[in-house]
Image (cartoon, rainbow, N blue to C red; front, side, top):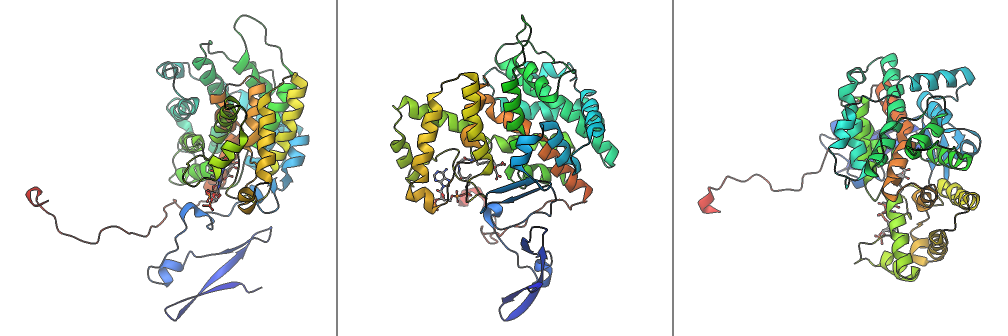
Length: 428
Ligand code: SDX
């Protein structure tokens, strides 16, 4: 195959190198386009055809429904690894040995206390505040209490900022939920595993011992692994471009949390449950909602369906769907919402509109059903997505900084008014 791409504009020919990735993906390197054509650029709304970077963290093949973290398949990792191992793998590139994992966890635990003054910020929020807005604010506020996490240039400084946020973020997640539900803001127990500690911090009742439930631990561990990274999605791209100005890790993560909040992105898991609830209230009339989803004049979309990259089953959705059956069965939870979801999935997969557009269930379609069975409030679903995505965001931010990527600053095609003279107000 040729190593160059040819472009001809007004009879002039230009050559651009082709770059090939380790999975034989091919990209046209257009970094010399504007200079060699004296100002011509490309335009690609939503970056559907544009790569923003080279990355060695996550590979996904949307046509084949493949997802791998640092070369390991998501199916194997969900089955055999735990979340902290996967976090280490994403951030540092290799699965940790026992000693490395223990040191990583110990370093995280050494930073798992949050400055008590953060509670004053939390107190200032109304109980009606959405947890994602609270979490984004508190994550940014952590910078004020950890100034050493801002100007990180060495790998050692980065490591310290990374273990700090991995230690403190679960506390912010738990406090965000507890505050909204009038529960005291408590810590968990550093003698526990990472996920066990998250569950205890979230659910410990002030007046009785918290009993760990292995079903919940395994379910949350798997869900966090499945959400841990997903190459250059909207929120990860936000983290990378924010960090490219050398803004600190915590504020870059805060920006990513805000991007994830959107219902077209991570906010979809909450929107899916609200949609399924509406269908249930509507007598389970899935056909009405399918018609709305296909009606171009109706802004309604089938939440949890479709994906920018996957034009096949989202491999995570397959794993989560199976886990939903298992978790609800193990917990003895009968949830009619699960049956409605399965009915909707079946209808959509047989519907020409969805088949023609290759719209399949994505990661958000079934995850909320498990979160709900675990007793997690609906408005906390996207917070749980953020907790899972944290190591992926960190890994991508670290890769961008270690590769010394330039500040992100896209071009534009101006389509506004051409030059015109000022008019005094009495002439307008
Ligand atoms: C996540 O990018 C990632 O990796 C994200 C994520 C991650 O792990 O980080 O995987 C997590 O964000 C998953 C996606 C969660 N969002 C939803 O479930 C919301 C519902 N889905 C859609 O809004 C939509 O599918 C997107 C936003 C996910 C993708 O949109 P695209 O790629 O911009 O596709 P599009 O809007 O151009 O749609 C193509 C066609 C259009 O119809 P036509 O104009 O061709 O006639 O498909 C239609 C769309 O109207 N369409 C849908 C639909 N999704 C797309 N129609 C009805 N219901 C839907 N859900």
